[in-house]
Image (tube, rainbow, N blue to C red; front, top):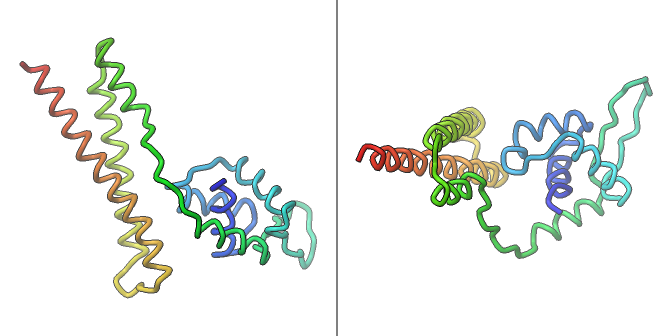
Length: 180
């Protein structure tokens, strides 16, 4: 149920065409709620059919012109109701952790190499988040909206910091065990 709400959030921030929306997802919401372009376009159709959004009228229709969407009052009310719902945290479901558990029973050839690959990916993501924070959240940006957006980004930074630390420790531990 969260993808429609992510789309409503993005469209309230700025009415957009489907293409613009998918690009914005790739640069922001998609970091913590990834979805494909096809999923976004499919949800736009469902939201429009449900009366939560509408396509904005085109001033001069042209072939291949992008249809822009805006959120209707019903869509804003739906998003506000969803925001106020209580929801329990979801359990961690990470294939790497499951593969490590399986390696404990069937062996682990190449596991350290895979952990190093994951470490590099998390280090790159952490660097990207830190650059976004530096670029988009200077000290003078201190509105309530900016604080909330920065808190979401800080959550991503903290998660990537956790993963880089944990993976570094795991690699060191496995290499130390292999050296003995």
